[in-house]
Length: 461
Ligand code: MG
Image (cartoon, rainbow, N blue to C red; front, side):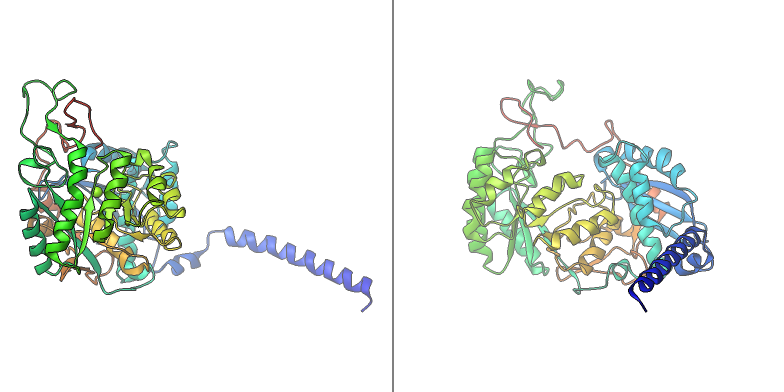
């Protein structure tokens, strides 16, 4: 073939393939019955109804979402718990998300997340994200049930047999703290968070007279708490001096093998936070949590250059604008996002995958206000992510286990999957109704925004 002929035949072939591409694109975009089959089952399964269940089986206000489908008996359960503003989340689900999502195909989890995200025009925030999380986690539960597989299988399958958990040990003083840490170690926990009361101060995360909330009033109880009438008092200098002593004592008494964690809970200055991390470095903490508040994310850069103490951060984060810089610049070692706070399992699995490439491990926020459904969703990610760090939690109290049938079991310090399709939890709605939210007013956890310095200045948080 001459060169000119060859060029012409190439041009013709190119033109023909372009034409074919146009046709096939039109065909591809047309409704395709094979898609239904590819998705599985006999027909598309749609969202029929969305219900919000408010329950407090162990006096912690939990928000649960039930997604009902057009397939009889097929439902999904998700966690939408923003315990401090639970009633607002209920409104966001019932009045806004539910009418937006009824009729949608349950298999389109990512698109449902993205379109729900856009649906309020103004995006983000704990109320809207928790509402979205309830639906998102429920849809993953449904997808697992449709596939006949636990959710961790859909995320790539197991890379470990169970998730190592950390126990909260707290004491009014070092003696009580040691006793509680030992009891946890005897139960098989290899990780223990240690918090000790600071005498005369309302200390975060501790029991007894020096606990963080409900400290005895120091002034007139008839007057509202405010700058001129502080109630629970906190001063950080004495605490900052005590933390290294606590680590020294616990390392000496409990031995080298136990992993020790501690939550500063943001309640210190920049200098105190750095000093604590430097002072405890020699006692090899597993991590120090939240030395600074999210409003002061840049502090982590100043801390990082000065010591080798592993840092955990992130339970208050909402969006990628907050956590992305800390992850990509390797300023933290553990990301601690509250997964319902960022919109559910879908965004959380992206955070886990992203973090893997920067050497950041996961330690999702998991106290009692993350319902068993949130823990089960975390566990699905933890079992299938290479960069898992540690799971916050030590099991579920009795009433909670009865309402949330099929809670993941904690055995020998490991949280284990239920090995059932979906998340493995079914909520007993009748029993849930027997545990209404504790009476207000105000109908929320009154722990935050009330602790103040001696001079009356409110502290974070
Ligand atoms: Mg914390």
